[in-house]
Image (cartoon, rainbow, N blue to C red; front, side):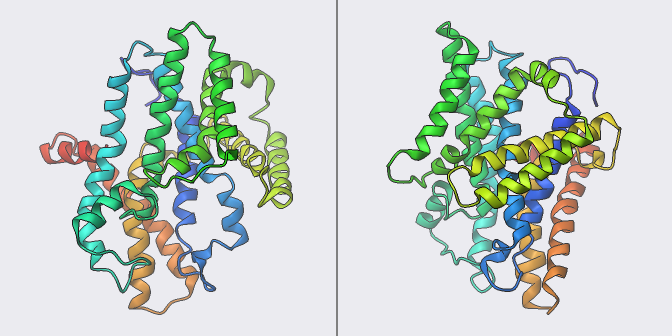
Length: 345
């Protein structure tokens, strides 16, 4: 798996670990729906601390992979080709799974948090507007698509104009830092506001990919002492900066904490996460169904302590899609499996 395949860049295991860490945190964050007191557990200290870096981490990794797999190696790839690949990878699964889920979702008025009506206008809104999505998690697919296409286009434009990469990344970073501070109506269309809020982390991931050799020489990622320092600084900044405009600093330290953790796992050959490598995208796409079934649906039939629903949601949200991933991998010769794999990106 870590050998270089023809036409593909070398496998970077610590980035794969970051993807696994990120998806586990995402599923865990979606597993507190039955927490007493309302707000789906979002007021819990553990949820708030985890939320400080889990989605920034996801976007950081997306920025890294865009530069590592395309900009640094396949720079000749034209923008239309890049956009089409992202349409197939991100938007096709979004539309297919939204369509498949829409009508069952409209029948869940007594179970789901938000009722939906079975009409064309509702489905159109569910494809276009954050907050009205059939599967709420899928705002990330829209925001990722926008960030990937915009940043790829800007980096290619900068190179064609003879502008040094450092200036391109600096301008992109300033753009995403300044734009959220501007006074304009927040745009829920196609999760634009999410892309704006998370764009700085995407650029940070791109910069890390572009200059990782130089950064790695300066930062002792594999040192347990450095990891401990990151944990302490992240926790301290969380309590100091929560609900302030400087909270992004805490998020970046949280990302550094995860990078250090992933590099230590790779360096010391701790392989307990290896079985999840490669399955993170399918887990993201399908975990919602497990989360809903093990929390909102099950709680209507069986009365259990809230944490039991959370454990069931976490375990099923990770391992039911993982079983699907394993099936797709082991039956890749099947025509129907190939069709399913294409539709799921």
